[in-house]
Image (cartoon, rainbow, N blue to C red):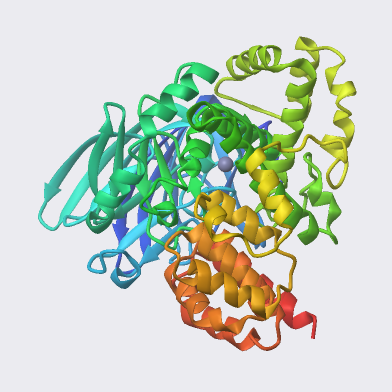
Length: 588
Ligand SMILES: [Zn+2]
């Protein structure tokens, strides 16, 4: 018997789940799901069967014949949740669990009408990555195991349910509606995803549709209008798209991530709706996951770079096809900066700067950083540099085909690459990349004329004529290159000349506000407070709460902003900000 994932009680000597049938009544009043989950096993089984759960109230467990099965819910463990131990009699084919979720379920965010864009109807969404699916469904919550599923969600009639699955119908009776879904492609549990709210949709192409609250629909449809060109570019690079549809759900502002690659229905933050399609690289990233991550999946969170490093690499290749190499090099330069921030943040936990990590006793949400994304990307880029693009692309295609719908470890990647291109890993010093801390000095550098212009400025005030031609990405690169603290004169001049505090582009705005806060330029504080009330994206909360909490003069603003907005923030965001404030207080 062995537990092969440090973040799951799933045991590879136990029965394995093949499919899930979920029925749930979505209750906005109690903020719970009243649910029944039937897990059908790979083969008739007997003996112990351990499942992951978190904060579930379990009322009964039966087998396929309705016979009650003995079970024990173990004490809650801080990171893993509670082990649900079931004993299966001989020839058990399926297990049905009746339960209710907690209002505090870590995967679910229940939004009051006031927390939505429309402001009239409530909204519910799930975010199961990394290990939150267990707070919605009792299951073997490890990406080592893939399941297909069906789901029936009973919801208030005036709302609509969407799911990262095929829609199979809607039936209305009285005050409720039942929406049915089926996921034919097997997924790791962290890709289980749904949302319920006032949701409308518009077709973008024969295989893509955008879903959004009605007030956001038109803007979202414009912003994501180029999605089919991305799918065409991605298929040319990585092979056929295996998930039939690529739909997009534009999320409420409290969504903690830029995007979440839920298959068939990607979830995207509304903060990239800038009105000019300048921030849609997030879409390319989530689309790329259709191959890297969703098709070839990390076996557990210790190999997260196999999901994210490969996806940043694939995203960059899609963007290079569409926008040209110059533009994708600027994106790579942004990634390099994000990596530097994460390396600095983990100065006291250098183990988390490895690609292959050891996460026993560490919450994957606490280990989350740019390292698996950007260090992984630069590692793959260095491999490409050694073998040349044609050979690398040929290998990548076989890698995606050979591990299709599978879960792999770093060792599996190494063996596959070594077999195809012997000696290259050693030449790239892959040991240092994979198991070493920090960032190798030999790493490839982004190359771009436009980047050189920004670097030559060395943080000085740019000429108005030069900056007038800058894209949002160039603005971010410039603002992040300014040494901190910047002088009062520079901050004043930047804002007067370029009206940065009034920017409607969240990437530019937050880069500016962070620079200003790090420089003690307190004139921006009211705008910072506005942003912290308007969005709950982790990246922005971290960028703004960090300097706000560190500076004793603005610490009360940070405390106040968190008190005011904590209920609007997603549980994952709340956990992050609590940590930042605690760290800042500890410095006193
Ligand atoms: Zn990703």
